[in-house]
Image 1 (tube, rainbow, N blue to C red):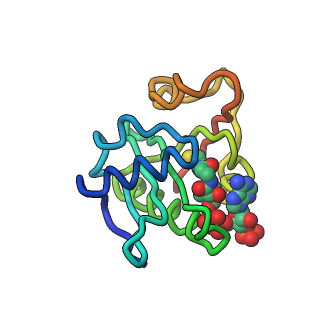
Image 2: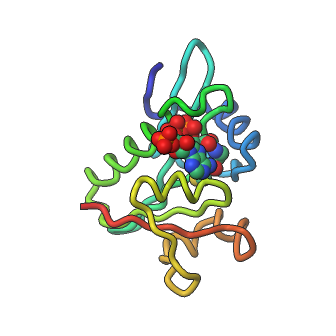
Length: 143
Ligand SMILES: CC(C)(COP(=O)(O)OP(=O)(O)OC[C@H]1O[C@@H](n2cnc3c(N)ncnc32)[C@H](O)[C@@H]1OP(=O)(O)O)[C@@H](O)C(=O)NCCC(=O)NCCS
């Protein structure tokens, strides 16, 4: 398995993986330098991305293809992006999820109430697409 930064040639596969997982895909090509992709045997098996605003960052577009789940790749991808965030001086990571609250809770994220949703989340396209109906906003302080 190879984990590396995304390139323009990955966009088509990334869009497919995001769509398969009902995650927003339209703007992923605009964030290539902040997206990590996992390839195995010629297949995109996982990805994760970040958006930055000062000391806050949005963890987005985490997806592992169904056949590769349950083997630790989801955790490896989220650890990798959190580590890149820390290198950039991010103090707080935030995300929106409709299906993986338990997954992120295991990694130290806590759900926040609607009135405490950070601005980086409020201004994201994801928030406008998901909210307010089904998504949970979660944050994690990075030390
Ligand atoms: C969430 C997701 C990335 C997890 O990927 P994965 O490779 O299967 O995750 P891991 O193998 O690293 O799982 C780590 C742990 O989290 C648990 N877990 C995985 N998905 C979970 C979920 N949706 N809810 C709760 N727990 C979950 C696993 O059971 C495992 O627990 P264990 O360590 O106690 O055995 C994957 O299910 C996925 O792509 N889901 C659809 C897209 C999505 O919801 N993305 C998040 C929004 S940004």
